[in-house]
Length: 99
Image (cartoon, rainbow, N blue to C red; front, side, top):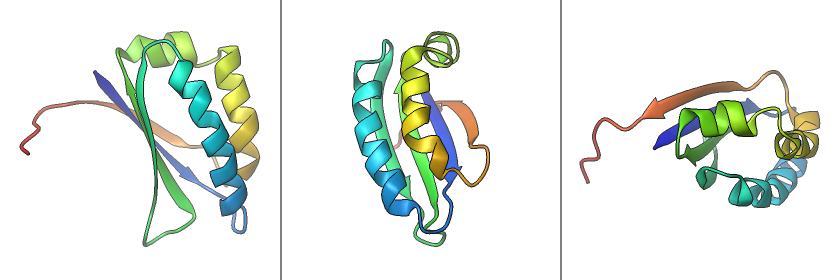
């Protein structure tokens, strides 16, 4: 299982629009092949910063199968007008789950 962590900074005043768009986008991820979970968190210290935590079966499920697909384009159309800049994305593998 791979956890994608995407950090997205949203333009000031567009937080509500981003949250509405990402809520609609949740369905896109729910039905995406290889996607096992989708969560969005908002920073307390920097309220214009969001993190998407997306669980994929494999790295390729995200980078090869989803990215660039029509589903990815639909997701981006819903939220990218709100982006302050290019999102930062990294993929992680679980090392330890203590409790």
